[in-house]
Length: 328
Image 1 (cartoon, rainbow, N blue to C red):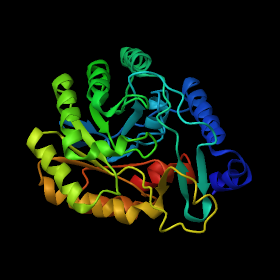
Image 2 (image 1 turned 120 degrees about the vertical axis):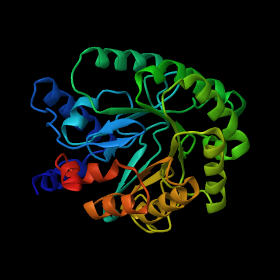
Image 3 (image 1 turned 90 degrees about the vertical axis):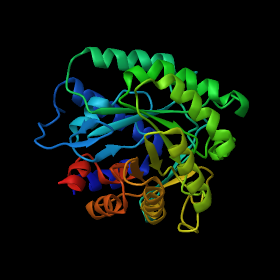
Image 4 (image 1 turned 30 degrees about the horizontal axis):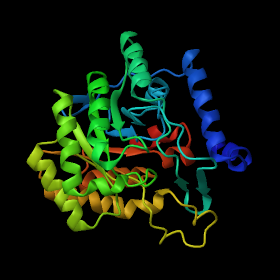
């Protein structure tokens, strides 16, 4: 495959974040000159009352600043989840902060919610919506700033929701990234409740989901699901990256701190999808993400109970034709 040759000869030798920035530039350029255009779809899936052209989407983290929605749509993703977006712009963690584990087609990142901030991204989404062109379903993933205390976290999430909910097709509350100190502690029900309450108060009719980590115990996952049912959220995104290194011990870069993604995460992510589905029942939405590399993975996650499936690392290693291979 041509992409694999190019990846091994060029991208594999580059700093992963620089390679990502070059891909971003290329996608934006090809879209701007009209060489990347979405195909007409004759099918659709209705989820959250929204019409998805297929069940496969780009997970949060790839398009942090709502700059790649149209080109990623043209490559075959039915929905793009942008972000994570925080109240204030922030640079993220010091570089280097992204690392490849090529033996496992995996990545470790400790980006740290680098983004342009809710105000700027809201303007970008408003401009995009005003153009009148065909768009995918747009999800917006929101989080708290690094320097925001846990006590003040609900205010950050509320601010992002007020600005972005009117421009989003759905919102995802991210309390599960390992790269913002203390963020994962907010998955505990007593901390999560006021955050979700603040978001729901400000979201109006925009569907709200919560994104959880694969490293939660089954009992903690069940507790989050019960809170979702109690507050009547739309559903759960399962899962984020993992801090476990059990399946990549000894590999190059495996001891770098941060969140691990890639095919090694699939079994646990798929297990969590099944558990969440059994806890939420059939009426809530489950978006499965984590380690999807093949059409078989995609199908298995649907069978486990996912309404929609997302990926990121599989796209990095699979290339621009990969989304359509997964869904065709």
